[in-house]
Image (cartoon, rainbow, N blue to C red; front, side):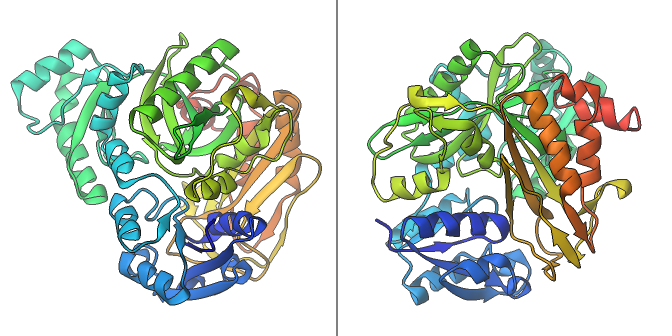
Length: 458
């Protein structure tokens, strides 16, 4: 078993990992930047160590500083959380070289899934459905053969960055006239964001649902999958609301999605937690999109909706730590039962009335909601100052009820109970979304906000 765990992250995910590690009897080390000296994770950990100034490039993204922190504190393992270095294969390799257990997949698995062009080829070879498209990266936007290939696919098409995500380097093209400029723009944006101008082209699936499957795989070759998460409510390709199960996925499709996910992870001999992301068209056909080789922001949705042999209490972070320690997963996919309906809202320090402008600052007062079936994952407290350097996430609000309509009602009650003064948050925006008839009816796809919120001025 891991003896001392250094959490190479900050904020709510660092708090989340610390709590699970402590319940397993593992000592914890918090790293922090000068801007994060008062962050909750530094208070809860057994030890803390400063690794640099506020900018993430000089602290949370500094591999030498983090490895030095491991050496100084005698930490024998690192949990990367999500974001920052979580999907950095070089970081995983350095940890291994230094004799430090990396709580996550191997460098090889990360690299295979990190390049989305290669990931798509692997998925296709494993028999997982993929979106029609050009399987090689675009090198010359002026290439006449390329233009012909795109025409064969049929407009609209979508251009994507091969080495990244989050909407960066992504463009939808509806006609040949806009293709060249879109390719050049996407390449430049990808270069700036991911230090690579490698892009590819796929058929654009109109009004798709964003469906993802959480998996766990151990070092003994065993893999399990969990009920799907529906992450279709997005703003600029960033998820805002997640739920499980999806209102549009039946049991047969759920099994097909899960088996496809298992095929892929077995193909690359994956270990640890991971998420296979799919898009689903209007007819219910699903296609592999990408794999996230880490724990995800929305993992509490899966934890709350999943009962193992009918019992609640799934802890994906604990499972990660046990897998990293060489233990075998003690249940099968067939043992996982759906306990009800779960919804998660990401509350960010942003002003919805000013195009979601960041709203950092001091939290003057805060009252977290509660009640049966309510979970809050957060790192903030009254008097805490949200720094300007990092992601604006304040809290994840997760609710469970026995059916979807009741879960929506519970989330509305919960968000109305959530009081925070000193900063602007996205709570009013979430309430607007939850109260639309379309959302209540489950008529949700990745264009939902554009169609029902922005265009109708709700």
